[in-house]
Length: 118
Image 1: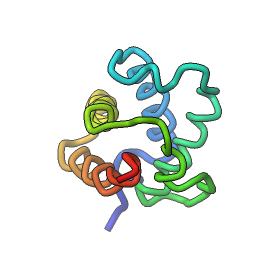
Image 2 (image 1 turned 120 degrees about the vertical axis):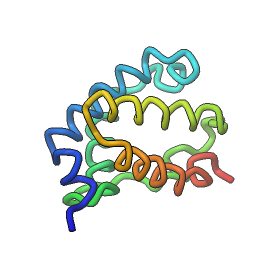
Image 3 (image 1 turned 90 degrees about the vertical axis):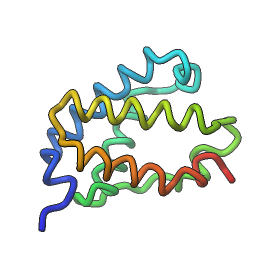
Image 4 (image 1 turned 135 degrees about the vertical axis):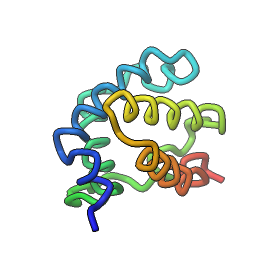
């Protein structure tokens, strides 16, 4: 059985997806303000490691847990949904199949409460 990481194309696909994803995030007025004054290069590097780990690839992620990383940001369900929507759109644009995109959405939803600090 292959991992989600392998099915979507491994490291090269994750790298490309994160770059496109953050372009979409920065263009999305619902959530772009959360990323003002952020070192986007460093954030993208962390996101690539994080997604690699949660998609079943090699685990080199050593960042904060989701609750700690998003504490005090005021993120609500609308913001969370916008992020997932942009990620799904990115993956679709890259030719990832609907079943794998649904799996990614399920993974994202599994940390919703932590990101929203509920």
